[in-house]
Length: 151
Length: 140
Image (tube, rainbow over all chains, first blue to last red):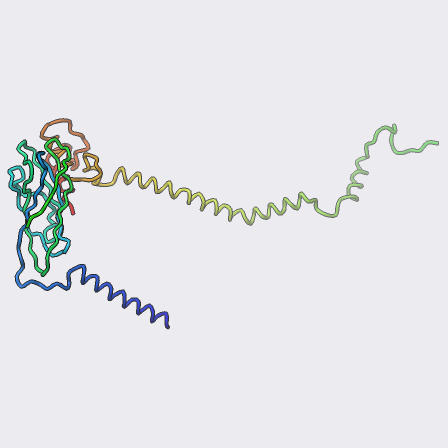
């Protein structure tokens, strides 16, 4: 009987812990905004003095607040078309973006390659993080480029 | 006076067969020789323990086969695993934009197009195969 009571106590404790974790992880405690907030962030890649012909990045919101609603192309003609991304990234907190250009007119130096549009329905500050997966020049050689995001 | 000892010429030491049989019966040991006991014990042990030993041998051989089977499964997975390897055209261990870029440049330049790059198996390497690589690379 004692053992059974002990098991019940442990099960109850586990349930409480699970509820607390889900509360923290999924932002259950955040207040819903009266009006959803829409905003955009620009994504830049800096390839120094090398021409940029292909790139792939990953952008995520670690706070799990911002939901992607759309992707816009970059400033240079080579990447004016919106980058490729998985449609499942919409309404998600993480997106993988990639694009390449076969022409010779590739951007050099720091260039805006995409603008990401987000909506936020819960209060709090999103924590965006961008990671360069890879970048290459027109000859396919991998470049040591940098990625940065700017609200 | 001479004594008849049963030998014709007195030099032959052979014992008559009948006598030997009778004597043998008389002096036959009352116990089973040790070698016969050992054989009996051995035979009994084989009868009882034989199936157990066979089972152990079977189990050992199965255990020995497990790593071999695991290696075979791993090899098959590495060779025929769907998608991951096929679209990794540059062989860098992952499918990314570089694979799509590599294929797109090869199509643009009209160079040697490998059969393995026909990812949709429509008999030709074209833009649709590039799209397949892109789709794979952008997947979450």
